[in-house]
Length: 310
Image: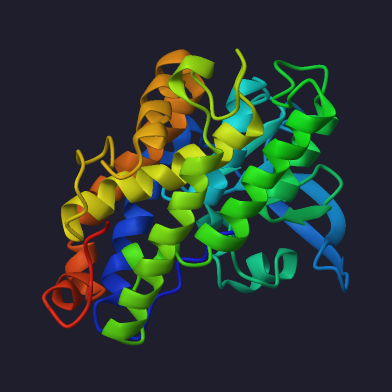
């Protein structure tokens, strides 16, 4: 999956984009090098080819990830980069380096205008977070942990967790923080989000099975996929939609997910790192009045709809 920060035509949309951009430029994940890319043809599959023209020295990294701290989809890629310790060969920069998600240069590389986007050293552009993660796990199999379960059944389960997230949770997560076409649309998607989180709860391991999403002693790419999205859920749902739980930490309806969210971060510093990045970016949104601007606060005041689950 990929993240788009496109908003409604609200008069406040520009201020939100400015706030997001400002946060990204401040965070920048500690990286400041820039690349300029010359793009070849854009293939029908959405992949583009060309070559990278280094902006500075031959020590520039071989690939560039275009992403921002707020992106839960990008965060799963950042987790793979951190866990495998490949920051020396994958450089993380803001999409603003290419004129933003809807900029001409960015759209040449990803016509969908979403992030994250990985551009390899030869100019090949790889969109979609799970595709990027699997590429990194294969391309740098000799670096760091595999982030893959050891046996075929567990690998299939990890793939299923990611597929469930991408198809059924990511498709409605915007109801928590985006402008919606109507109050009814937000309420309908919120109900679906609750339903799909219930499924995710059923897939999560119990605390006695270990600190990670699947039973075992090591984290997998499934943990990397789910942690960032649960940052959104634990941040927004208790504070703005009245779901029982602890802001930024838990939801009472999902005890296994809540216990896993705490234990996996305590056990894996890189999971905590991406969680802190996403939560920090959500805090910047909050300070900028995001939930009021997109109409979420006003929608929740409409008592004709159900907002608090269960």
